[in-house]
Every structure is written in structure tokens, then in C-alpha cells.
Image 1 (spheres, rainbow, N blue to C red):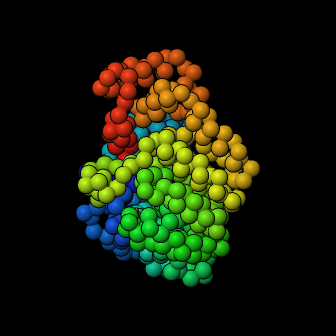
Image 2: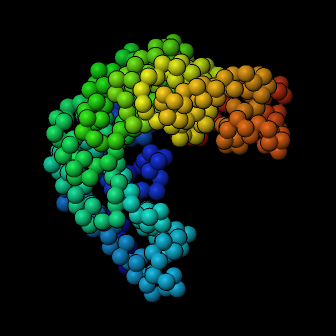
Image 3: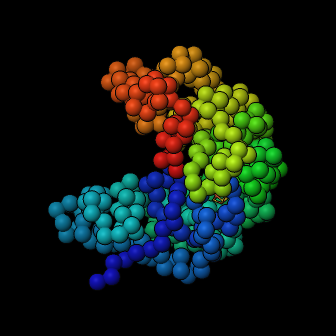
Length: 379
Ligand code: SF4
């Protein structure tokens, strides 16, 4: 017997880990950013509205099946319990996604892939309305989009999407400095970022802007930090989400590093860059560090009131001895530490010290390559 299934794209933001995934386009229509491996070698495609609606109906069919199992089983009709049982042994990725979504309340949906805004506005609005009508527990619908596309949309179109039910857009700002954007082949200028971001804010759709620390390399890190802050100050998004550049084979940037055209910063240099970024932010956004690639994941808060608290975290790291900095860096990259407080946990501290001995050439000093290669696992 054939098991129900629907298409799921390769990625979603960390904050959408428990959302239902609805794929409205395949891959990325730009696909040229040097630091991004996600869709390389894959062709962009729009999906017909009828095909997407069929996927949504399949989600409903899977949901109905889970409800039926819940009624027949000893779970007292509670679909969350049935979903939890399915999660242990799902027949396919689609069942797993529906079960996880239901387990976490069935309220959030994430529209894939890289730039759903490229779809005709009428069609995207129709899909979102159909999604909410078919699965009425959904109260929040979010998606990725590109600034360039948001800049080209008329404000009325974005308002139309909000009225259809689009709650939030996640935009990869990466940098606000034109030479960095150009070098990375982002296909967007700082002016496009500002126009697209302001359009989204004006439409009433919540906006998350993603910043990529380290993207300026050793050559342009200062301008990357200060110009990115300037662009963010003009947009004033609801969220600024920080990520740290991680380079691995498969990215065009990997070759640039190998041939010496791009020189990576160390963790300590990136912390200095983050400090400069935060110092220059003058907006009312929430800053979030919800990604494993960030050294200081505890840098979070509402601007402007939490700025000093965030800078105090930077200062705390910077005041550590070289040995403690190394211990913390490796502990973070091995997934042992979540925050600076854990440096006081002697079990964790000792296990990082043992790892330093194993990984270092002379018994106590790690080279940067060892740290970079550990970070490759994160992307
Ligand atoms: S636009 Fe986004 S998904 Fe597309 S290549 Fe650039 S970073 Fe990757």
C-alpha cells in the first residue's frame, strides 16, 4: 500500500523546527551566493498552485489518519500522544513532519524554499488562504524571502499576503556593506535591503533579518559591522538574527579561501566585530543568536535597553585568559558548552582540556584550522 507523502524542502530556520513545511517553490532562483551551499547544482522551479494544494490535502489526510488512530487507541483521543508514538517510527519524512507539527500544537507553518515571494502574489495568497482553511489550527505562517524581491513588490501586494495570513518573513540580509555583498555575489545592494525591509515592515508582516558575522573576512570586517548596523537601523526589523560564517567544501567561498582571496577571521576577531555591530545598532529590534555557529549564543536581548547587557557578555569573553578563551572556543565547537557560565563546570572544563591535548600539535595550543574544521559540521 502506498503511504501518503508530500514534498519537503531541505532547510528551515531554527525557529521553525516544529512547523509544518509546505513547499511552494523548489530551490533558489538566485543560487549564486558564495557562502551558501544549500541549493547549488539544483534548478529553481515554481510549483503549480494545484500541486501545492494537493500537498496540503495530503497533510490533512495524514492528520485525519493520526486522529483516527488516536480515537481507536488507548490515547483517549489525544492526537499529541499518537503523534509522539509515530515520531519513534515514522513511515516517511512527511508523516514525521505532520506528527512533529501536531505534537507541538499544530499552529505554525513554514513555506519553503529560498524565496517564496517570487511566486505571483495572487497565487501565494491563494495558497496561504487554502492552507489556513484546510488546516484551521494554523495561526502563524512564515517564509524565507529575498530583499530584492520584497523591494520589487508593491506595498499593497505585501499587505495582501499579510491579510491572507503570512505572519513573518525571514530575510538573509547577511551584510549591509555593498563591497561585501558584491564580493559574495549576493545579488542585492544595501539600498535593496533597506527598500525591501521597509516594505515588509510597512505591510505589517513581522520581519527577521539574518546577519552573517565574519562575512567581511579580515579585509572588510569593520565596514561590514558598521554598514550592516546602519542598514538595520533604517529597517528596524522585529528580529535581528545572528549567524557566524562557516565555510566548507561545496561553497564557492571554500575555493576563495584555498586560493588566498578570502582570509577568515578568528573567533576572537569575530567577537570584536559583533561588539562593533551591537555598539552601532540604534533600533528597537530583538537581537537573537539562535544558531550553533555563534560563539556567544547568550548574546540576546531587546534593543536598545539590553545593549549594555549584550556588550557585557562580549567584555566577559574578552577578559578571559588566552587559555580560558581557547578552552571555551573548543568547548563551544564540540557542543560541550552552551554559555560562558559553564566554564565553571569542572567536568565539562576537564573534558575540553583533554580534547585540547588530543587535537593540538604541541599538547596545549590549537591551530585555527582545527576549530574551522569542527565548525564545518554545523552547516
Ligand atoms: S539567496 Fe539565499 S538560498 Fe539563494 S544562494 Fe543566496 S543565501 Fe543561498
